[in-house]
View 1 (cartoon, rainbow, N blue to C red):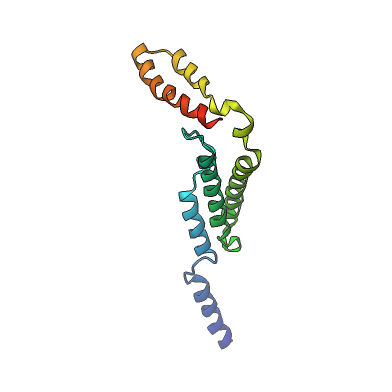
View 2: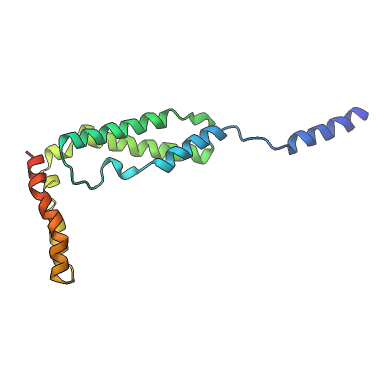
Length: 149
């Protein structure tokens, strides 16, 4: 009986003592990655449509994939494991789209963003504002066309 009186408080003390979660460091590393993660960085709008620019994007995405793979998924919480898989699938999709599909080599519309010009012209507003908004995109047309050659 005396043993059980000693064991019971010991168990209670052990269970109530604060303990760090098992995967706390992995979760922190993953959270740091997510805070710096920009899913649109692999294919968003850009003014530089050169081959070097696309290769730089591919290299950045592959660097993010390697960074994500360094995180120990066994130490992640259930929710973070799901988020890890989402982040990995987004990055792998961007890598495949840029490195294998290479849409910019097959579709000349990538280098002719004239649809945006029509949107600027067609929207309501003052003509002076429209002209000011058209100057930058029109200035980029020669650069886009030369990148497409």
